[in-house]
Image 1 (tube, helix red, strand yellow):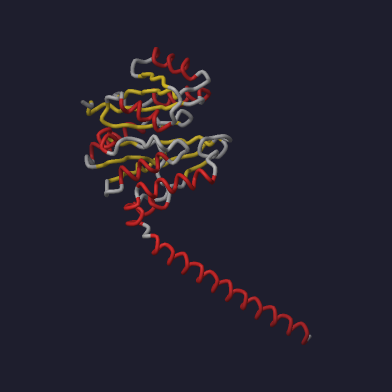
Image 2 (cartoon, rainbow, N blue to C red):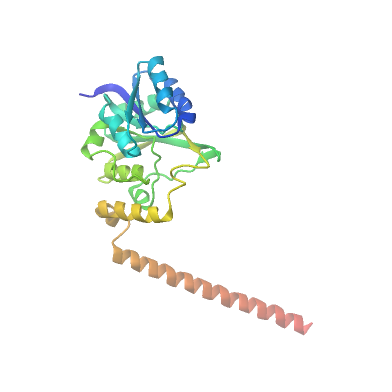
Length: 276
């Protein structure tokens, strides 16, 4: 049975040992003290295991799981499965959280017990720096693209009810699929109006390395799995075709009118020049 006060922070790590200490330090510095942090080494070939075990020795709230490389969804699921908290936060090994993030999330859940997901404003650092301009949450925007980063809080019971992260999605977008599954029936979402999450931009990252062909496959997979959600918030295939055709007609009409306007301006200027 889940501990109602305990927050479980899951940190999957695959060959990111150079960032792991920073991520775990941001966990250790939390104002809210009733947490456990489960580090899941997903078959890394670097010093991830060595670093993780040092943290386990340093503070008993840190725990460690070692598994063969199975992908981030499987790593998150393994960590959550072994967790004891009511609330879960998945934190990638190269990202950071503010020292008040857990406290503010717990406060939000306490004030609004019907919430299914809590996240915050965010900031990028590394190869890019500055505020991450996240659009206001709505299910329609969620249907168009992923508008919530992976480090958001949710209830373990809800994770269980949707069957966890989809382990078939090894190439990426697994967090978007999970949010859709979690929220599509009208669940309540709350955004903390403060930057509490820091997203590292690397030259080489899993998201940047996703090929366009992989994106096509991933989009098709998500669309088929949640077709009811996409039809409800974006429209059916015939509706989308009609919208696209109308947009093309409007665009062609705009190009034609601009072209005619330019011709009129050109002819007018040419006539005035000749007249002089």
